Amino acid sequence: MAKRINKAKVLLVAGVLIIVFLPSFAKYQALLYKNRKLEERINTLASENKRLEEAKVRLEQDISYVEKRARETMGVTRKGEIVIKEAPSKK
Image (cartoon, rainbow, N blue to C red; front, top):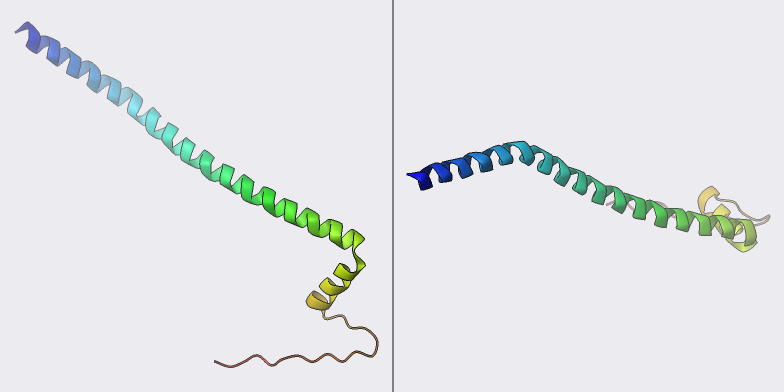
């Protein structure tokens, strides 16, 4: 009989502990997941920042790169050049 009461007490204590700590544990797991995602985002943004910084340095120092970018993005041409554009293909 005493073993039954002890088992009941153990189960009761275990149940109370589960009820008390399970929501906190679930929140902890959610925060860990969110932290991992934010760290991934930080790494992605850091690499993007590095790439942009390198592009900035090239734009400040390399005149041929500036000319290339101007030609690609704005369609800048030199005096006397003729621009030939391809018509988009229809599919």
